Image (cartoon, rainbow, N blue to C red; front, side, top):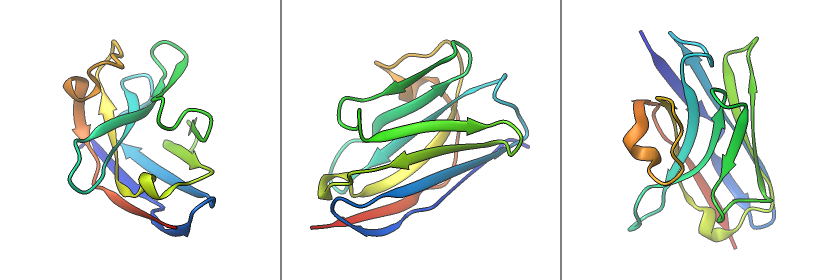
Length: 125
């Protein structure tokens, strides 16, 4: 069975850091790209980052570029999202997902094959 398990959310003050983890099973990074999405209260879901193994690249939305870093550990079948310089507007439920190649930054949701459960990130001002 394909599973994605997101963890690492919590409460942090503005300017702080958190590292989210997405442990995957049932597939490898050769099979799918891995994306991170978030949904803030009252807002649409946003695709913010992706580990595009199929192209050997990474993707960051403008809203997180320069502050967030995505990486993968093949030995642990885990993708990480290091979030630095957190802002109150980063408060959201964060989800990881398996993306069916080819990668599309413009329409990340349309290429999701599997979703993980969300993990809540709260940034206080």
